[in-house]
Image (cartoon, rainbow, N blue to C red; front, side, top):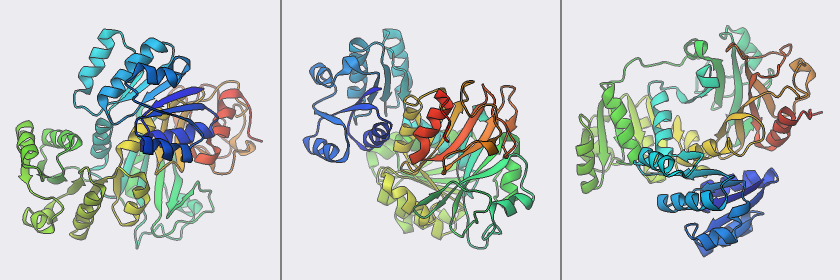
Length: 456
């Protein structure tokens, strides 16, 4: 597949690395000469220097021959212009664009009315707000992801000192009374990613991802000792970014008392005019004295949502130290994500990871319904429809030689029933299959499901 990426930032580099490893023909258009040099040294791709808003530049990059055009520059205007040019020069190509403006819904309407087809308009702030709202009431859970239209849930959790899970094998956890249709699908241990088997043992400090059917989500949380708050009273938000305003608006609608801290006086005044009941504080939300005087110790949740990763980490650690149950940090730099979790910040959200998750489903082979990336790109959860010609169909799982580092997490039958499979289970054509795999084995795994070539 021929792919043209407009923009050479972290999202572009992460996507490019994955696409190159899967033998796609890749071109990156980047305006900054120094960044072009970095990309040339880092990636086996053609790098074209110039603005993606210029027709000549995109023509030089081969836009007319592209199968997929991804616009992820730092400028909404450039991303939209890239999509318009690609619509004319390469009407058959799939087009993806990232927008950060709060007017994203209006742009969706305008593009549709103008006849310009953009297959996917990504708005990371909306995705981040949705992810935060899903976990803000569950202090011990880092994130919750849905698959199969909500029939299957995946949640992350930290194993803390004193947990009854420490030292237990996965088989022992299952025998201890785990609810049906549940599975520990991944273990993150420091820098290591483990797709576990039954004999693997859980250690203090592990970050687990647990798969469960929707009906068994709450029983699984209770079984693992995770408390769920039915109602939030007070939430602190640091930073007046667009995502903060979105979250505050949703919390207000649920009757939650919100305090939002913003350093910039003009921005503070503007936010105060947008929000109805939120108390907007013009102050530095990373200042311990400011937070303590505002009553941080009484907050149910603390959300650090500034544009500065270091500020978000510092503020989150302050909140953890005073005992706030739920702490969320927005992190832009992907290499910070493992470190922040090791420091005890139980939930991190990344607009860049959110954008990559949305884009990857458009560049996969086969009937891929969703792709979820974990940390930088060490592992993925993939939801796909099993082809009737796949060599995995019609066989017991115990008889299929999956590559090491991959497991079937769940099967959703066409009638909607959910099975977290054991060895005797059989995949049928048309089943939704949710796979967990290390990044290194994903191309081989997907090829077998799509093209009927088994991994033997």
